Amino acid sequence: MTTLTVNISEVFSSIQGESTRAGTPCFFVRLAGCNLACSYCDTAYARRARGRPVLVADLVQKFRASRLGLAEVTGGEPLLQPATPALLRRLGRHGRVLLETNGSCDISAAPAETVVIMDIKTPSSGQAVAMDWANLQRLRAHDEVKFVLAGRSDYVWARALVAKQRLESRCAAVLFSPVAGRLPPARLAEWILRDGLPVRLNLQWHKILWPARRRGV
Image (cartoon, rainbow, N blue to C red; front, top):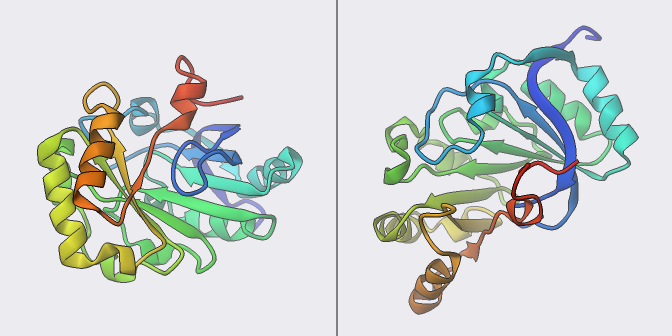
């Protein structure tokens, strides 16, 4: 058990930039490797890299040393690595844990106490066909779903899916996030207000705070 490892891209502390925990200090573990290539991907360095093996026990120790009560495991795509559920479980002994996943892998692998933040890939991502749509049935009351929207057509598509699947009743929050530089946040806010959608506008606060580095400290 002590030799269990995951391949990581980076570990850092930052302000949580997305989800309903936005603004909260958070310890991030970014795992390396991804099975998708979204058009708006802003962590291509993690998608392409093989990463370096790090002991799960060492990552847990780093989380404890950070003195932060919130951790997020992200990627890349974390659920591609067999040891990820064990990492989530062990981090969860020392604080609240979030898992950000691209929606192509079975989210039931996440421990019950982990908060899953699942991307639902929109048409502009070029990866909507890769979604595991059974994951909508696997969502739990404390999980969240996120749509990254590049324009009006993505918005209309997402709006229809939210209504058809009644997503707001399946999980804790439905997040609509604009692609930076392609959809102005104010325009997305106007559409949400006009349609009275049961969703939350999701801005990437870490990019506002640290536009050059996009990570934190």
